[in-house]
Length: 402
Image (cartoon, one colour):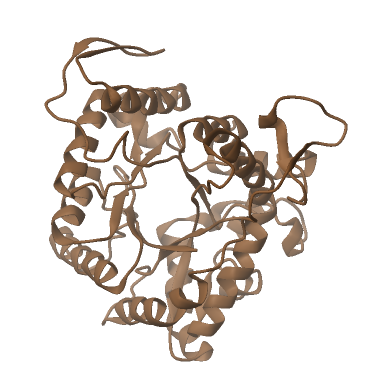
């Protein structure tokens, strides 16, 4: 299990953007010093109540120049908001600045609102994101000036000023549970991830298939990185951690993210194994609900380690994308939590993975087809109708489906 310091760079009342960024750099420097594997941030625009991270290059430059060993990256660049050649040059620059420590996160975007100020193409955002990834690969693997023909952009005789340090190109991440995108990622050797608002039962099925497809394409011993985002707070005891975190968790979910505006999928809250995304969102302002369903990781070091491994088993992820700075946590509390996590949680989970070793493959029951349609023996439930409906509910709640 790998560990990432993840940040939305949420703003707070009574603090300037300069002060908030100063906090950010201290947090990223601490993550590097404490041994976190990754430092990730987001790209958000025109969201004063939420993220103040408007520039992936600002985050990447700060992380590259203020750290020594940690791998880092935007998680990710919203590819449809820019010409993909700008993205290629940004990636090459950050990889050079860091000596080859960049992780390239790409996102297609969620809602129409952030696209409107830029006049960007929301309807073709997924195609634009894949095109950006294809151009990155083509540009960074070219030895000479190159041409590129994509569905949206045509480039001729392009000669980059310089390429990336990492060969053939830096690792790429596209967070998704979409099977077509996961197949694409398996072909390019990319990684993925999801979030605590997605039911883990709905995550696990496509991610098990992703591992199988990835190994078919990249080698039987290959293991893709699959991230899972959630809030994390650790204190010396469970009781102390819950007292410290509860108010800030509720504020984050209800006020900063406005998740609680979504209606539940039914009259009753479903058991954990049957939760939908609307259920999670509608109840996300209830600290006890989040704890009872293990959707956030709050407690002592031992408790948090147990919560993470249990969630990973259920959701089939192997990278924790932990948000330590949320709500109005201040006074060094988020730093103390990070220090406890590094000293006492990371050693407990470092050798754990929910992804089993490679096994012989067999066709899915009642099917015959190429190896990409197979799953390892004993890999668990196949991706069926119930999971499809849960993923569809999640996409509808987030604005992907209208």
